[in-house]
Amino acid sequence: MDMQLVEVYIPNKRFESVYEKLQSFEAQSMWVSNESEDRKLVRILVKTKDVEDVLDYLEGVSGVVDGFETMLLPVRAYFSKETVNKAEEKEEEEKKKAADKEELLLRASRHELISNVEKSSNINLNYTMMIVLSAIVATVGFIKDSEAVVIGAMVIAPMIGPVIAIAFASILGDYKRLWKAFQASLFGVLIVIFILVTLGYFFNVDLKTTQYWARTEVSVSDIFLGIASGAAGALAFLNRLSGNLVGVMVAVALLPPTVAFGISIGEGLWGNAYGAFLLLMLNISSILLAAVSIFSIAGIRPVRWEEVQKANVSRPLSIVFVTLLVIILALTILFGQEV
Image (cartoon, rainbow, N blue to C red; front, top):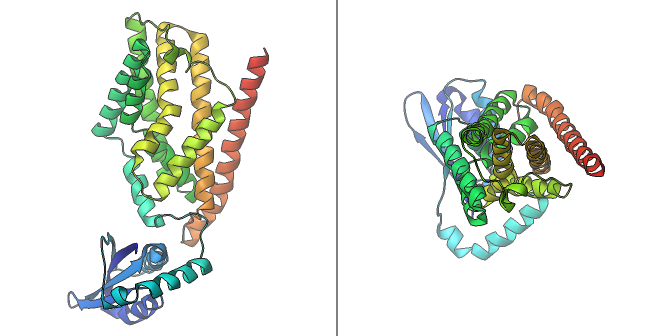
């Protein structure tokens, strides 16, 4: 049974009304304790699929009255006399409730996802060093024409977080987080380009390798790679799965063309640089399109009225904008091949 623990400190003057409302939610157990003269602590053991409803209510109340504090804690295990003796009965009830409240995609609560977005959008020394190291490893893989080394660079590259964060923030209409995620993503790409331009300019790099040339040619089929990568990244993000394997898939679409673009500029190979740049832009757009679509299907929505209004505008605009960008890039590729 996947459960989480919500702990909320409630001011005494609002306790009765808030506690009465909390009792209306689906909860496995609920405990109340006096933590001070001014506040009470309520612990609510809730199934993961019901956590967001509880948090949405507490978020709304906390924005009006001072003194509220809410925490969400993971529950590794839980059992009681009721759960041990009535496991089968509980399972049947859960199936019925799931049928009544079925979601298209299982996911963590919006509050947990926002917290992950914040972590993914931070530009710090660790993020910078990982980007630098991945660029160096990918370059060695290009020079040695080693697919294994290039894949190793993709494992290192932390490029999934900021791109997925851009899609998530655009769905919510959270322009502050969107700008922060965009800065982190752009920063990572520019670091890779800077390193490779410098390397290509000052050193004579042998670029007669299949690993390099494969990233300077682009076709419409690359759209499907980008869409698959973005969808996988979004699903992993929604379910709080490990980003390592999915990160490799996203890095396949982002890191190699970025490396090829930078080193082509450094060597003065402008035709190859154009192909690598087109591939990079096509992959980014496809990843964003898939991620935005997945988040929309998953029902990512804000709660507060003013945020809902922004999201209702931002969500369709982001889908239309990214879709048009993918179409324009696809047409550019098609007409370029005919010429």
